[in-house]
Image (cartoon, rainbow, N blue to C red; front, side, top):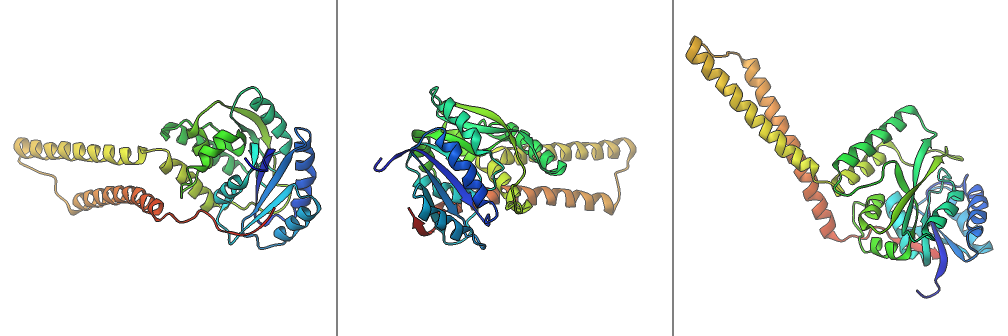
Amino acid sequence: MPDSVHISIVIPVYNEEAVIEELFSRVIPAIERIHQDFELICVDDGSQDKSLEKLIAYHQQDNRLKVISLSRNFGHQPAVFAGMSMAKGRYIGVMDGDLQDPPEVFEQFYSKLQEGLDVVYGIRKKRKEGIGKKLAYWLYYRLLDKMADTKIPLDSGDFCMVSRRVLDRMLNMPEQSLYLRGIRAWVGYGQTGVEYERAGRFAGEPKYNFKQLFQLAYNGIFSFSNLPIKLMRRLGYLTIIGSILYGLKILIFYFLYQTAPQGFVTLALALIFFSGVQLISIGVLGEYVYRTYNESRKRPLFIIKEKHL
């Protein structure tokens, strides 16, 4: 690759002006301990504060810091993908810009890669977050593990380091509903995890709200599993069996006792139940149809407004 470097670190940034100084004061020494030939690719995902100004100022002081500014806020996953597409490293790391992922762990990642592996990802041993959020994450990863056709490591995020050949294959799959940790697992090759303690944010507020977290989880389930459709089919079988059994009960009551169940409430509840099953089934099918339509439009995952390389 022309003008290649040894290590590239991709860092998505969105409204992180309070973190940037501390971010570089920790990331640069951490990577320098691994190798002197590196680049940091910071992707400004349409920040509304002074994040971009600060990033450009650091770039002017140190040209190892590259800055990519997107035309608007495209979201965390497209921003990471944008940075990955610009990376020139033989090894490529990904971390969030809020310092919840400690950059010092990259040294362990790199050491594992030197043993012949192609992917090393972080496993969150502890999370400094609320009990509700921690429980939701714990349940989601275990649910996804049972549902997904691809084995996606438990409690792992986008914090990782991969080889160039793995990155090249990931870049060949620019899916609209990105779930990068799933794509990374799907690619295969030698992979392992390294446990670390996920810190709280250094400053500022979380950028992933509940809706965005739910959408990311949704992408993981619908992009790597056909279980929702299977469940609808099985639910359909169960409702048919239930209807047959209920019909047999009515016939038995009629022939043995000359009576049959009466009542508007029973009929109304049955209609409501079956209508709900049909709507859920249509919704699940609609989700897959929409995703197919979304892929067919071939819209770019991101638009770069400016580069400072």
